[in-house]
Image (tube, rainbow, N blue to C red; front, side, top):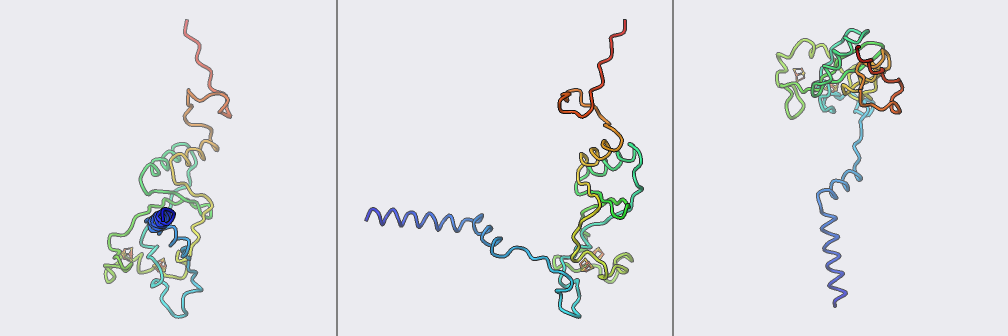
Length: 181
Ligand code: SF4
Ligand code: SF4
């Protein structure tokens, strides 16, 4: 009887654990891993946009001059100090990428101002859109530290951390200035 009680208790505990939100999340995630649909898997003649989460309405990218000096890189560092800004390089072209959703994208992923949408949206086609894009670029910078490290590697360090130990630095520290007599 005692054993049965213990077993029932264990069963109750394990069913509680199995029913916890985390457990359900893991169970669902494992059972149904997200599948990225490729464009050749969309039924023939169907509108690709009907199978998309409106990826093209959730960012904008602006071409940038290729940075050549520290000032240019510092500008990019400033961009990257902002939330949801990143920067990528494709075919040697530099772009500022801002991950932000158009205010007129509706919850059903359709355009709320379809009749008066901007020209750029009218001209955009599904021919080479990002429907099944792998989002891989020549280079991708998400943080100010990343662009700093890149610039440091090209141009030498911008800031010398006086606390950095010589052992951790590839370059020797600048010697302390001699006191003026
Ligand atoms: S144009 Fe491409 S990325 Fe934009 S909604 Fe249609 S399928 Fe998606
Ligand atoms: S105006 Fe319409 S089509 Fe253009 S980005 Fe916004 S939601 Fe998308």
